[in-house]
Image (cartoon, rainbow, N blue to C red; front, side, top):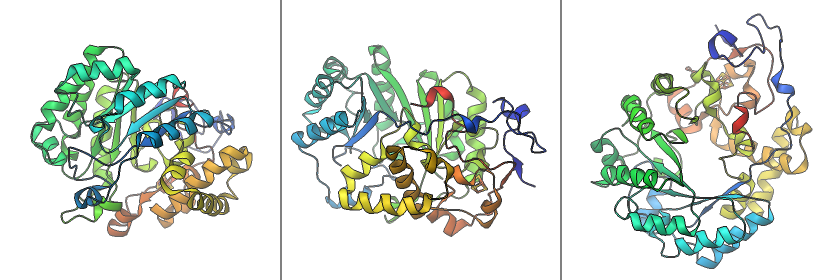
Length: 393
Ligand code: SF4
């Protein structure tokens, strides 16, 4: 038996399609076709004082094959972002607080007009030095994204490869909360080492009253899969059940709870929390994927990927509806889905197949696609269909 898209009794998101397929209200007609996020990310390098077991770049960091961007290059990318109309920036790494020029770069971002300036940090430095945080805030920092990977020190310290990392992070979060003027967002990567404690981790995160909590379901890709003892993910369904139970306890307390890298059908009745690759361009808190690819891979790769993605997207009604800028995003995202994700044969008859990423390829190849249950009902092509309106740019 498949699910049916939009069961109003269960998810309280308004009537769309009844279980017998009658369209009552069609959100898919709302037009977000010309919306692109105003946020960009700048990966400033790979230097890091932790060694997270699931890090995409772990092998390169261990081997010392990484290089940091110069101050001038980060400034150049900040300027490019402004030329593209970006108003918010996530400065990331590696660990940005290891750079001596971080206050200067934040100040520069503020000077050239960024409204929201965020760092993505493991909390190690700020947890031991509140005056450093004050310096960053003086420079213009107003948003911090931190990662908590376990409800207790042994789990977090083991996953981050650093004894004491948990205590430092908690002190960092407290320092940031005491500062007051900085938005707090928290990430929690869910993998086989911590999925059974997701609920207590959620309780702990909620106790800090963050603006958002992001569950990122571990993706066995890139370097994270090539180290000697790779982390596995045994069952996405089990993980989804734990996350759903955790969300149920705290719905409405934290403004935004997001779950990334999991298909809709495993998060039935929690679809508004699911964030997909198809949604990237519309999300206020997500990065401009075109700029990201341009920065990381260069123009040749970017152009080839847009062209390949456009070929996959040709029958997508939302692609046809979108302006040129949005078409590039849709095409690039489609190329990423095509190369990194996989669906089962049952997905062909699923109502949301056009807006769903499917499973990460590595996982699907090892575990199969048997967990996936297609939705019945009308076909949906609007990638913002399940998104809460206040999360759209
Ligand atoms: S397309 Fe496949 S993976 Fe996505 S929701 Fe439907 S059945 Fe699940």
